[in-house]
Length: 255
View 1: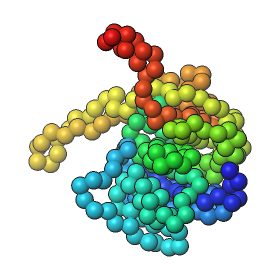
View 2 (view 1 turned 180 degrees about the horizontal axis):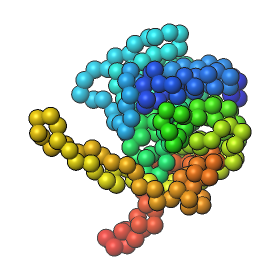
View 3 (view 1 turned 180 degrees about the vertical axis):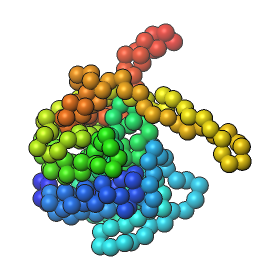
View 4 (view 1 turned 45 degrees about the vertical axis):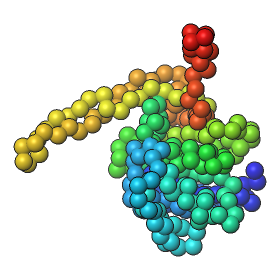
């Protein structure tokens, strides 16, 4: 793909006014011929790959090639490709830049990754981009902005199999301190390892889903290990959830 001639569709799960989306727009404008934005009206974090089926969806035009959808990240990409850009489909879908990493089991909940999944299902090369942080008020957006072009050019050197998308996580270090780009497998980091219990003003009990566990933060070869060490983690993800070896064992067991 010739990036300078390509048209890219951008979406996210943090919403149309998210700072990470603005960073991605700036970075993409330096790389692609055309940048189109179709993103959710409001934050949709942890929306996963949900699709709105029980009510109509509306598209709001904000500016030239910039639209908001009152739905999920999946809705936004679907409507972006099938309606907003229907006269000429995009060459690629980028999702992000998410405020916070999408590492380990985060990907099963992530609306950022889900937007890239939808692009993949629509037959387009798709990349989810996330900026890891330790302090929510001090996100290293510049790191993702500076390194994005290099990452994308590296990813596009190879043809991707059907049903494969790329998950990219940038570390919480200044651009000049990045340890490099490393292709790594998905690590382990399950959210909700603890619950906080309390009572609301009416005395009714509530629960607040707690922090993540961090099993693989220093494990070599995982996305968590790479980002913790200051590197950019690139993880190819497959939409085929089939466990191949168990498939064969179950065929034998059921035969």
